[in-house]
Amino acid sequence: MEEMRSLEDLLELQTLDSGIDRLLDRRSHLPALAKFRAVHRRLEKLDADIAAAQATKRELDLAEGKAEGEMKLDEEKVRREEQRLFAGVGLTAKDLGHLRDEVTMLRERISHREDEALALIEQQQAIVASLESLGAERDMVRADKAALEAEIASEWKVMDEEIARLEARKRETVPAIDPDLLALYEEIRPIKEGVAAAALTDGTCGGCHLKLSAAEQIAVNRSHPPRCLHCRRILVTR
Image 1: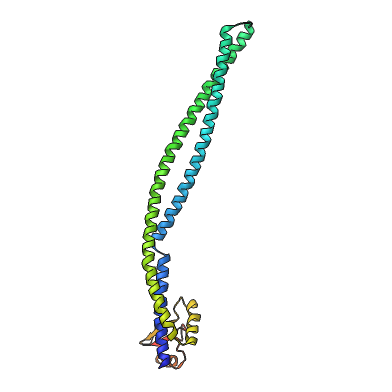
Image 2: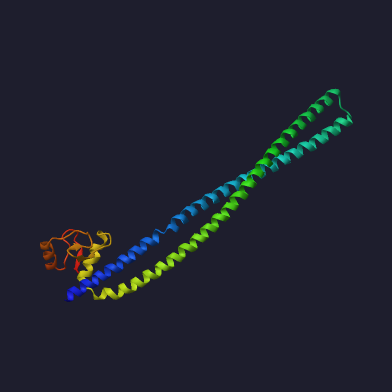
């Protein structure tokens, strides 16, 4: 009778452990978790894209600043050379020809640099527009991530409360089980997908779901503890 009570308590422990296992599995496989991971990856990609765009913008800003600086130097040089050209003081015809060529070359270079500066400005504008678009998308993704975090936290809270309730019942049940039987149960559980004890109902093992013959049932009931001849789980006859 005492062994039977211990077996019944063991079956109750199995029910509790199975319930905890199911909750833990659900906890780690919430649909919201898969969505959260996808959103997190998207957010990381957006952060990287924004960082790259910001780096490109900095490079363009520097390039534009350099182009404008060089253009100003050329413009100042043109003004000086034109002043000399217009004054013509102490200059030979050959000198004047060289000055005119120099001014022409400088004006062509200024025109070329203006085109470069304009191209840089257009690239800057495109980068700024891209940054604004990426930033807006990142804000939306962050909002989605926050909503998913709240959803996950809410579902986890309910599950954790149920796990805590089952753990409390488990702590009440374990002391009533024979230590040797409990040790065997803990040994079997990891190798039998978490199910070490099962009910034997109408000759069918609740663990492997195989039907035991009458002779096999007699052999099981005579063994201590009773174990399924097929899956070797501990059996509790119902």
